[in-house]
Image (cartoon, rainbow, N blue to C red; front, side):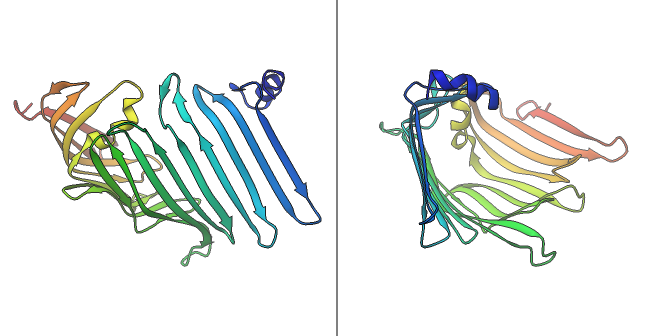
Length: 276
């Protein structure tokens, strides 16, 4: 693969390149119903995202209707910035059930890391009998610097028209972020974000790779009706001890309400010290 195949790849997937000596091997034995896929690559790039040091395999269990996969990377880069070093995904698919786990780890003192796991099952909605996907977020965690966060949920149901989230938490003993409700096209359904003494530096790692480091303590809520089409937003959020790239910012309050007459939302950001 590599240079000789990049022209062919770009004809199928624009803006994608693979390193020289990339190999993919697919073998199928119809007599034994055995499938094996193996791939290795120094690097694969797509739209500025680089998968470095790829080693992956997919195999089926010929005695069961199932697949087992393993996907290892030395690092994932956004441009020249490392996003997820020592990244690994492992999982299996059997009887309409997907079990998956993913990890990454910066192997330095107080480095970022994560260990995520989920289980997804294709089933019938008990009310409508339409197909849906039920996702359980199994006990998971991530570490940011010296902070340790837990992730869990009572379940997420996904259909063709809505996503129902049952108490998804990102939490530490003294703080939490909670998402609960339904994202749909209906004004009768809403999703609510609740912030309880939540340190936003816990999600700053998502922005850090773009050159931003953000910290602060948040409290309040945001409620969104008809989240998937012409959403209506109501919010009241307080931000304290804010810093952006090490620079202190005045504490702020963010409020929003929906004006039915004009069909628009009013967002107001106020400096808490000045009240304006």
